Figure 1 (tube, rainbow, N blue to C red):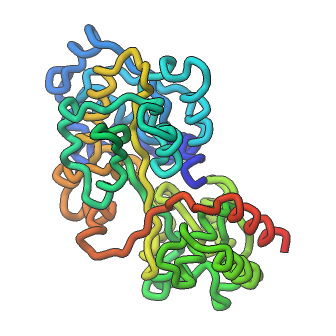
Figure 2 (figure 1 turned 90 degrees about the vertical axis):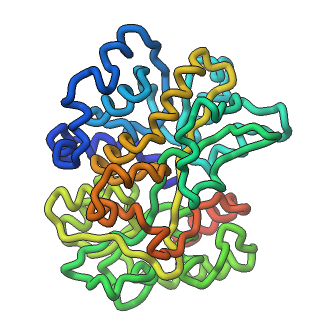
Length: 377
């Protein structure tokens, strides 16, 4: 899964130069440097609790931690985050629903498991929206990621992103890169890299082949995609598996385009490379990560404050400035200039960019088998 590597991205982001200086340039540090009073820092940490959160570390780099914790007046202690699978294992293990206060992970991956089969089987507690007033600002694009059952809300999307083709603009003109076909077409032979991941690559190929809902593709459709990928495999330079490996492929000039992530674009820009992400005419692949509260969390009141802070405009602006990852809150844009909103692509809905969520396929086991067939061909 794409989001399984977000923890390592936090380390990369730190190395890439995220600092208080960058926040000053973004206009965010004003609240940090105005002293403890505006954020309530002294009062908060003198008297409030802390919460233990299992979440990708890239969502709370040290440089912007004071923005979130100051707004919530709660200290956030990060528990190790490995992947969505590991997060579910932590939650569903004996004692897991009381060991952690807050979890944030991939919405599509975790929603069914945390809800359980029937109403009453939930391993998470309802989120009291009265305690999360900022939830009213969640973007229309992600309203469907608010997970409810029986009149209760159990997951709230906090952070979102998109996967696309990341490319060197000096070697591939942007007006020739408006399609997932960059990864598959013969004219790019030897200059592109795929991600070694069944979910990502079969989804991208399905969109390029004209499927409106690739997550729901039939067995016959999957066979056609498999054949297509095998036929296109001759054009790739390699398949990447890790963040650093992928960034280096473009930084070194070995390739000029690849299936990539927002944070890879950010890292390459900070290294001085002329890069961009494309806006595939077939559809941009989007995803969200949602907050949920283990049903026996001992600090539920404090967790609600933290979730509300995640959806604040101040935190949203700070996060996208530091990492390029946007929050689902429409309030973030109000804390940025028009130029920054455009730079960080917070206006994709208004620009009419077609999107498709990285949904969990109904035939995921078969997708994995198909991908292994492609790799061995």
